[in-house]
Amino acid sequence: MSETTSKNKKVETATAKASPVSKVKKQKKGVKESYVSAPLNAALWILSAVLICGAIFGNYYYANYVLIDESTLQRLARVGLVIVTIVAGLAVLLFTNKGHEMLKFGSESYTELLKVVWPTRQEAVQTTFIVFVAVSVVSLFLYLCDVVFLQIVRAITL
Image (cartoon, rainbow, N blue to C red; front, top):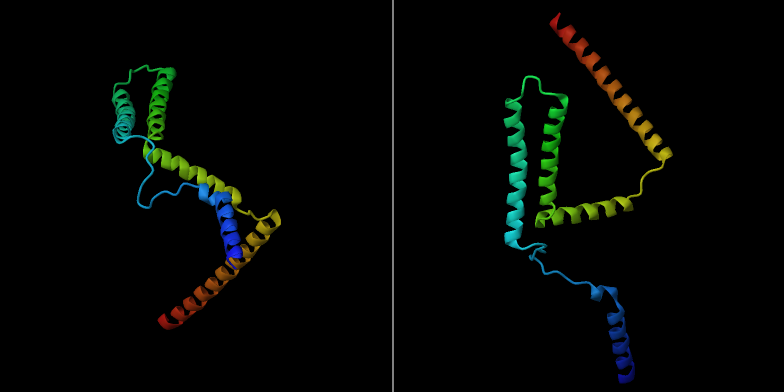
């Protein structure tokens, strides 16, 4: 009896060691994973806000002081500089803790998107046809109700 018990314990221990679940680090509940330190995170947020606000302010500032014969190239350069500055501000945001979480969420969402079983073309066409028929039947019913109510109101008011 004790021999089978010790064998069972050995088997359980061996399977527990070989289990890939035991290798996964479990994160404590309520503890957020931090990618960058708090001061660096705050500095990145401030830098991003300065870049985005600077792009908006610069666009409005230079839009009011447009030269009379401003060329298309100058306008294109101003708009391009605004776009580049906003993209740089958003890129800086990706290096913050929230940015890392957003990238992780996007990656997980894409993984889930790949798991979706999309309908075949035939199923999509059949479903579209059923919806079209249902909408047609409901609209015909509403039209008939409208005609009946119109006749009732016309009979009462005359």
